[in-house]
Length: 348
Ligand SMILES: *Cc1c(COP(=O)(O)O)cnc(C)c1O
Image 1 (tube, protein in one colour):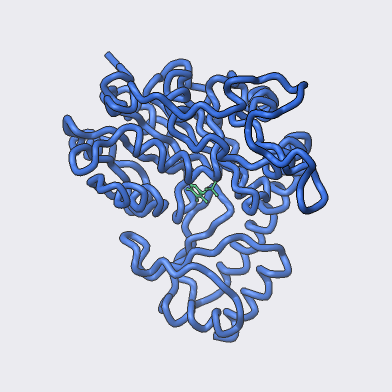
Image 2 (cartoon, rainbow, N blue to C red):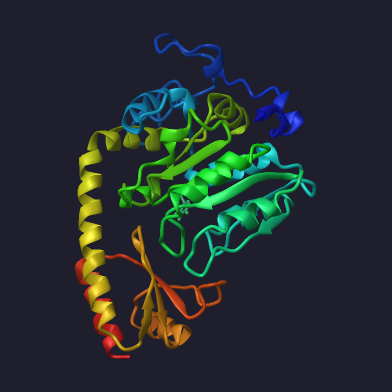
């Protein structure tokens, strides 16, 4: 019943991608006179004069082992934001096809859709930030190509019920269900990547920007069927991951233990912060979180946000966001940063 042929835009299915010099000869040894590079070297120290591997084969080999998927099920991008943009461009005819998002959620799904004139159908989460499965499925029409699930969600921080996501995967076969797991490292929940072989309509996004501490390198991942990954590879910029990022990510992949230790530290700091904030009378509610962000309801969020800015403590004002009225989103800092925040709030 599921057919990628009906989901990808027809001209993308037949598109001939750019063939780079490194596509036509993939060996590593030789005298390279094929890509108009500078043969002498770079103007700074380091081997930067050659174009990087457009398929990032080495990273995918290593990553596949860590993630329990096949290398052919991995797309790598300039942040997971690149995958978000490409998924919309691969599937949605502008002004014709639509996507479904569930606010309050990550802003890039709508921005990327807006850029290419793709209508966004919004079906809000419940007040405790869970998916309204029946309403989402009722909002699907013949032009719906993508349903965006963010779990753990940004800005609320909580996991979606696993069963709700499964229901979407079971009942939406005329498009793709994308599960954005940017914060999965902070949870014990099993990644949806484990279900890739069961659901050809499933795409999972992850990133090295949060738990791995590598936001500056711009490295994100999409996991999906081999056929869909081929489409994404066909439409990405040939050299979308630069050589510096590729080299440093290869190094990072040998340091997963360090990431896990950071996660433990962040979770400890989170528990401390929740305790300290719970004692403050200006705090009206702390929403349950499965990530490194805390959505906190205050008496007067806007004033408190400004008060904190004046003290050089930068949080995210979410008080204008649907279902987040009166709320500030706080990223978990170090214990020292968190207690500076709490001391400041005590003085409000
Ligand atoms: C931070 C974030 C991202 C961005 O990831 P990059 O890999 O840095 O582009 C994606 N999705 C969600 C939900 C996020 O919060």
